[in-house]
Length: 92
Image (cartoon, rainbow, N blue to C red):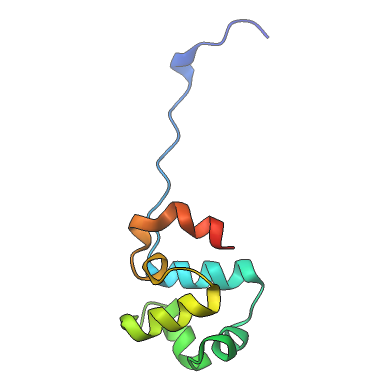
């Protein structure tokens, strides 16, 4: 293989910052749940789950708490994903 020239390598890009909408969808999919299943577990109707996942509805404290209970995570993971990204993967 020869010598490896480190000048030929580009550092990996930083992981992207996830939005609340992306976190909700990612956690739901990692659990293998449909939007309807998440609605049943959280008490938030499926239409609002869809709106949340598409960033068309504000999360709010109450919805964050409902989703956190359904996912068995701290509400901060959902409301502030930019600060809690390491915890999101643990939640799945």
